[in-house]
Length: 229
Image 1 (cartoon, rainbow, N blue to C red):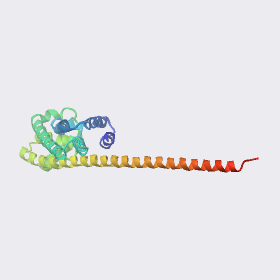
Image 2: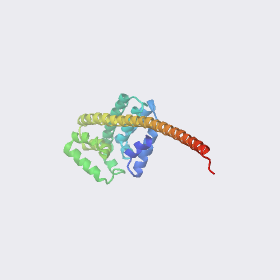
Image 3: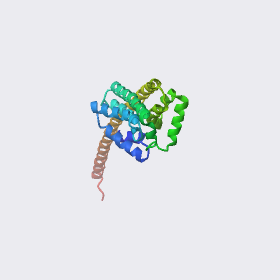
Image 4: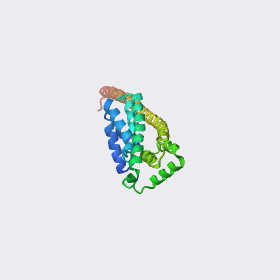
C-alpha cells in the first residue's frame, strides 16, 4: 500500500522523492504519534512554509489512509487536520504581518511569479482569495503570510480561513480514508481470489495426475493382454 500511495501522490522530482519518503515513513505510525505527526505537518505547511517540501494535503490524505487501515480514529483525525490547518494559517498570517517583506526577499519566495499573482489575487478578492488559496498547493503555503502583509483584517481572514480549512481538512481526510478502505478491500479480495485460484490449480493438478495414472494402468493392462511377438 505504501508504494501505491507514494506513486499516486508524489511527482517525479527531487521534491516528489522527499514527499514519497516522508509519506512512506508516516504510514508506519499509529495512535497518538500518528495524530501528532500529521497535525504538525499540516500546521507547518503555511506557518513554517513546509508546504514547499510536503504539501499539506499529502499529510491529510495519509491521516485518512491510516484511519481507513484502522490505525487511528477517522473523526479524531479530521479534527486534528482541520484544527492544525486553521491554526497553522493563522500563524502564517502573523508571520507575514511581522516579517513579510523580509521573507519575500528570501528563498523559496524570492523572484517567484506565482507569489506576485497570489498577491494580486489577494488585493482584488480579499477574503475569498484566502478560501480559494486553501485548495491550491503553492498558494496554500503563501496566502496566509501574504494576507498578513496586505493588511487584510484578521477577522475577515479567520472567517474564510476557517471555512476553507474545514472543507479542505474533512475532504482530504475522507479521500484518504476511502483510499485506505478500498485498498484494504481490494487486497482482501485478491487474497481470497488467490486462494481460490491456488486451490483450483492444485485440484486440477491432482485430477490430471489421477487421470494420467489411470490411463497408464489401462495401457499397461492392454499391453499385458496383447504381447508383441
